[in-house]
Length: 320
Ligand SMILES: [Zn+2]
Ligand SMILES: [Zn+2]
Image (tube, rainbow, N blue to C red; front, top):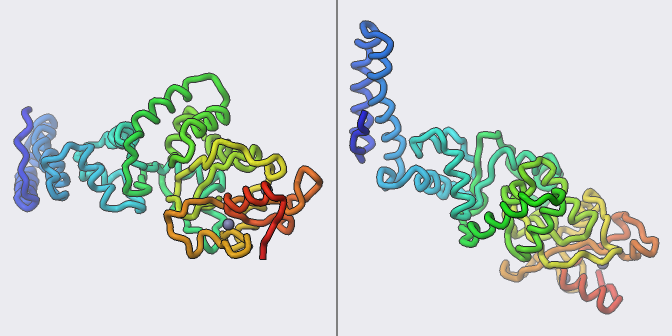
């Protein structure tokens, strides 16, 4: 059956739909199964057109464009897959979302990946005063992390695919991907993909920071200005040996105690600094770990990376 040309006006679509459903009463009473099914086809088309017509310009956009247009109206808000089905007029919206991510670079987080992050305790759960709760999501839900397109995404996803197919371990694949993208915002969806969709991606990513001393920063672990679900390898360099192996729970407690700010005398980043002043927070051992200093909250202090560097350059720690 040929598709009717699209109508544009939601209310005329609504009226046509009511008319069809009203006439369907007769089919219910009299028709055979096949006839009943065929009589519902135009109603199905009308319903899809009605959903599409709710977006301004919706009827002129492709299904993928409608999904994007809808998500961009609600950045940071959890959206049900069923809503996307309505505005897109298609049920295979999940594939379009993958295309939007990989080909166009929109940071769209799925509920599946979000839950893997929560379970690793990297985001969400243990929230301090300065941490925003990470929303709980069902597997069929989606979240546009920020209304910001990453135009290098196609290239990055292509590299992600090559690394994914190499036979390195998950952690090695992830750090390799980070090191090719130093300073760039990497989404959890990319990391999961690089890891071959293995759920351990979140745990391995955390270990890179906590055990191997790579400065992999999230909003809850060093840069409060980052959106949720975003990771940045701040520099292509592991922390000095003595600052590695800090358990996540201790690091968090240290940063909470220090009000998520640099303790260096007169610094206090990020409070009072413009957002563009891009640094990140690290935990520094007062008595160096390698020289017997403990991994305790008392032996650690929060510093921004500039002052952390300064401490290691000069050997002097000036904190209030
Ligand atoms: Zn240090
Ligand atoms: Zn500082």
